[in-house]
Figure 1: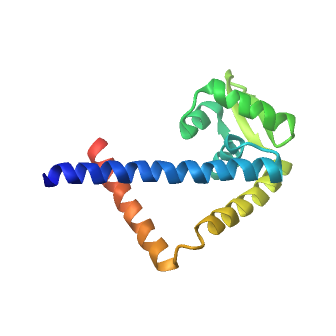
Figure 2: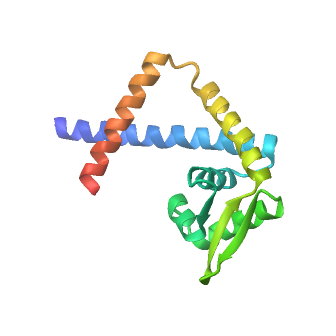
Figure 3: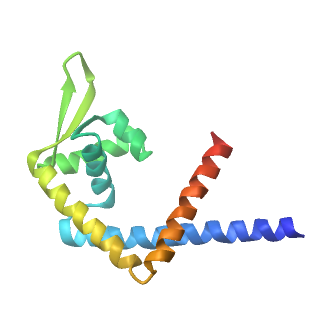
Length: 151
């Protein structure tokens, strides 16, 4: 009986994490479009480029974002049209595309990243700092446990 109750609690916890993630993502989607006229995937791609030092292969970006190269192409097309990224072929293999933040893209991303931080902080502000720290530690432990089981 305890095993059944544990599995019910695990399932309820999983659904609650999914629900909270979906709520936060929906709010971020709305805020990014309203304030910067970019989609959440566009922000994510710019974040990936920023963390990669400003440039990355298209294939690495698709792996990082866990989407197909085709999906990345559409995101890059819009960002390139807006002057936020540029695309270049590798001279030694023209099939390989390198995506880079432009100077304007790096500046805009800096503002977006700051607002992103502020929005997340605002969404979680009613959770006390101690509780938020405890939740963070529990989620870190959860990640370690899951990785140990699946990797």
